[in-house]
Amino acid sequence: MAAAHDLEMESVNLNMGREMKEELEEEEKTREDSRGKGPAKNKKVHRVVSKWMLPEKSRITYLERANCFPPPVFIISISLAELAVFIYYAVWKPQNQWITLDTGILESPFIYCPEKREEAWRFISYMLVHAGVQHILGNLAMQLVLGIPLEMVHKGLRVGLVYLAGVIAGSLASSIFDPLKSLVGASGGVYALMGGYFMNVLVVRTLEMKSWGFIRVFFLLVASDMGFALYRRFFVPANGSPVSFAAHIAGGFAGMSIGYTVFSCFDKALLKDPRFWTAIAAYLACVLFAVFFNIFLSPAN
Image (tube, rainbow, N blue to C red; front, side, top):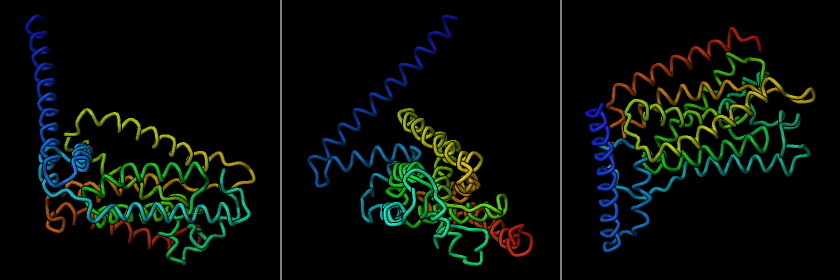
């Protein structure tokens, strides 16, 4: 028992020593940044982002070339577009959009509607319309908190690929598993970002303990968003319209496949990674099956 206790104390001391060493290195880097050309605050932000988003072996490479050019334009642009559409239907349309979905919004040209599946843009544009103030605030909070750091590291093209893959997967999955229900919200894209990020955390297992507080807060947001989605699907009031929640699950799976391969290739050529093409092939096979189902087998026909 004494030997085990000594080993445990030695492990704790080593961990404390490692953390103190890292803190001293960060302070030294900050002092060097303040004497150099780049602003120290920007470097500190990049160090925090690298700890959230990257395994330890990739952080040095990121910090060497870290910059805010281009800025995280994709996530910010998508968020502004979703907010603008929400305000349009909440303020300029005569409906109670601030609290919950009203029947007027079902006439929007953006919403995914089973009866109008031939209007193919609806399989993507549904992400712009939200079912109420709780819905849009939850999605905006999650995609900004996670999406901006992801875009700082991986840039807009890769983050946009994962996000839109989740959006398309969400509408196609809803058309198969919940074929008679409408669909609104950007949850497919948001859950794709989350699936890709957390899959990397689980596989690489190098996320620092300092970031677990961030993950706990994020899981609270996810739980509240899923609760609202389940309420809108199964416990909607008699005068309301139920909305599918299949996009949450399908977006998560898209993130755990395509998102994982994209976000794990930070310092590698994505197009040369066989995992990426395997994920793309599996994704396209699912898309083709969904198209076939919608044309020939859907109960909504």
